[in-house]
Amino acid sequence: ATLSLVDIDESQMLESIERFPGVKRRLEFLGEFSGVQIFDDFAHHPTSIKAAIHSLKAKFRESSVFTITEFACNTMKKGTLKEELLDSFDEADFAWIVNEEDIKWDIENQFSSKKNISVINDYDGLSEELNRKVKPGDIILIMTNRSSVPIREALIDIFDS
Image 1 (spheres, rainbow, N blue to C red):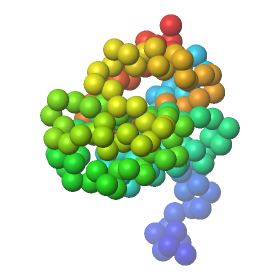
Image 2: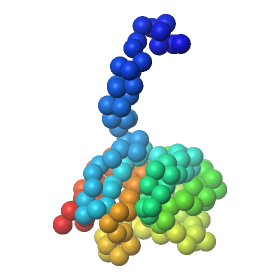
Image 3: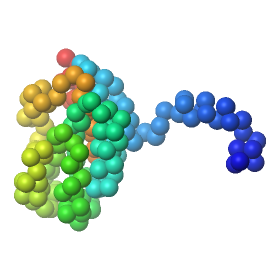
Image 4: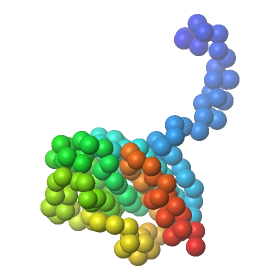
């Protein structure tokens, strides 16, 4: 009904929607490297983290979903939502959370009961873990609200070699 009010042809609208690439950094598909699909998402709060993981698990039912997450906004650095975060990664097959120097709460302690989460202090050992855990057909989801370019480039180097 709304389409007729604004004089838009329904088939033209459907064609446009099919061609729409999506919004940048919202489950943005970066490419497939050695059979591993890499996505980037701006998710940085518990609800958006959970939703991003759930969306990929629903779309790629046969694939394992691995996440790499940085807590870069002030709310997350202060630990304001740390209790809500506890279940946010439950659907991920495995999650790496970067524990940066400016984080004001004990991330390792908070997630110590979660067997599918590893807290890392830098990216040095991540390459080995990724090569050991991630297989062709799997998904890697980067979640941060800062530039994801360094993580993107590292992942592409790992899986495109």
